[in-house]
Length: 313
Image 1: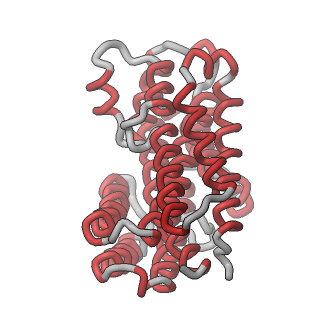
Image 2: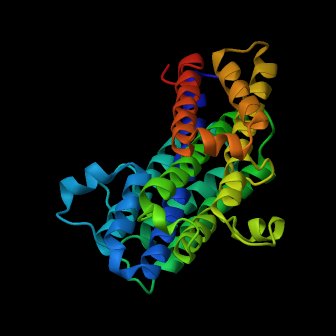
């Protein structure tokens, strides 16, 4: 496979995943802002921090408020990480590698772009926001369903999977980090009803609330939630699950090409470290430090994949 084709598949899926993750972040910010209306500006600021676009936002807006943040994250074409921007980038990459995709995957991606372009054409009211965010998630799910049901499990499929899980791991890690160090207004709130409501909202933002309650029918607490989102091997948005899928995809690609590279070694090391970790060790050594280290390692894997497979050649 040409490196440019591999790169198109990788980034097509990263952008599709990012659109869904941004929608989930906005949903989390909206829910939390409703529970703390007196500090809504801080909550929306934390959403911008999680998305990594706060500096860009402040260059365009004088203050942080819900309406402006929602517009910037969903509709603003000057923001390369807005939903409308990343959906267009996903579609452009899909068009670049169209001959590598099944007809169903291309049509689902193109339909996703057209549907969201229309839905995000005008300013979104608070009343319409939940439906729009649900639509963004649904459109992303339709593309995943087409991939799952129609694509051969070969290098084409696995490069797309790499993009999805690199992006998802980064998003989950950033959500956790911002919750622990930005959303919580004071250490005095740890364990309070406010703290628990915020943690539950974070679970909802990754569609993991019901699964967590099923596995943990007792009292909700931050340590159990952190363990679930970091170390659970069957929750599809946990760090451990994403690391496992990244390593598995690289192993499958290595079998197809008859060799392995540094990206596989890095991914396998990350998977192994998460399999051997426990939440007490992580919290005692510092959750923030652990997450920052994870983000750096995840970025290093992504960069090494691009170099090894020559995405731009």
